[in-house]
Length: 269
Length: 359
Image 1: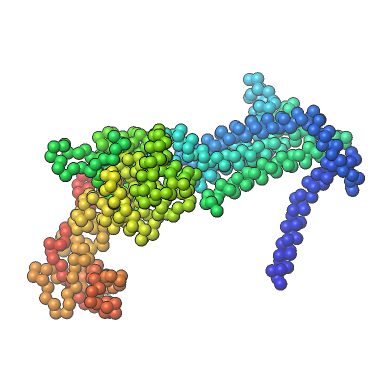
Image 2: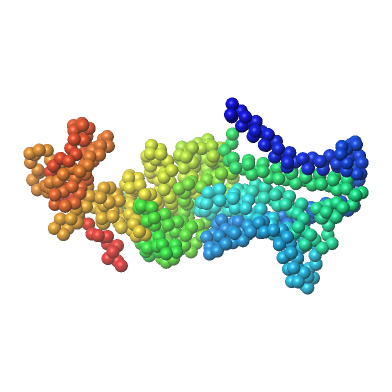
């Protein structure tokens, strides 16, 4: 009796949570197919025309390209630096190791606005005199600050799970440092690299705050949305872009979590 | 030279010069922070020898093995492998291979890929690699397992794969770091025999780290007993057991039966002591002491008596359960008994033995 009512209550609560999380997204998704330009409830009919218009909108196209560029750049930097940091922290015991670990993770907890203004000040006062101007490069650097954390955490978690003596065994069997990396370390961390990379990409792709401080004249997708949200005749196109963003972010996160799950199960069923 | 299985030193060694030691350590010292793990060790291990490093955990035996393998660099001292100074050489530049305690198999590779790995990174051709790997798997009694993954094998099987992966390279010296530690008793005893057989078959020098005194006694040609980063004794198993050099060795290898009489400290092994029956005459020349049985431990095949001696000290006595029933045995608790042993079966020991005098 009691378990039955508890079960029902739990189901309701779960349903409520899901509705709470996804109803707003559903509304946006619906408006993206709305016949009328004005958002009123209920919608009067369905159309795909906004999707076509969005696809041919040069502003949108440009923003998407810039976003992809920024996300790829930031992910690449994070992949190299985050992985190297994880390898170092995992393999060597050195003075200040815990501190370094903490400092690498900290940026993801820092308010974006602080990171943003700090980067802005640094770029403006320290790097601009040397000819580095605000634009794609500064966006990539800004995004890399939090992407590194994701890579670092993913790779480190994987390294910690595999037995420490595995790399030693490789060296013991005659493999030099490079062979050990190529045949042992890389294959063992491959999926962690991929999962971390996808997450980093998704994080960078929809980042707003740090981007506003570092973008200069460049417009990424989130910045484009912010700018066009207040223009009533652009609103349906904004909705279309928003729905695309939801899908674009969901796919990598889904794949990443699948990869993480599968690689956790070493035993074949 | 690493590609040929070495022969065991010939018995008729008159024409050949004394074979060089396979492993020679001189004054090896290693500390981690404030902890001294290895405190100045000199050691020579002969070609083809099964040599054990025995000691409790934290005694420095594993660190010493890692120094021989090249995973740790000694703070001081020299490591020689067959007359080559390898102290500063990387693990991959040394003609030794290691069997790790946790096996350290590569989880993303099949068994044959694991076994072939050492040959592959050294550029051995595919054909030869395959046949040598199959041969090695045959030797550890796992033929036909090549296609499986390590996760599909049992602990004992993984252990064998780790062994095959090492001996396929035909190293000069094979280092084994408590390789049987994770196996259950039955399997461990089986593998002890197996390891000994393989060692005799390939004729490679084995350096074997263990904390299990029985294992060390059964398998080794010689063994070194470690304590606090120092070697207390290096000798053949029977010598270590019957003539322990120090009190520590006496206690660690067997039961600590140390007595002090007239200023002499000596050890007498529990199986050498006889409990005299009521009114029984002792052997001529036997040493007799009386005491009280404090505790009786029935272990099936034998019974252990712990006896408090009137002259001071405590001895453990082991008696086979030949004619006594477990009932009789347990009733002996608290009884007054007389013990006898032959003086020639006791061995005098120093506090710490020779090592102390070096310092």
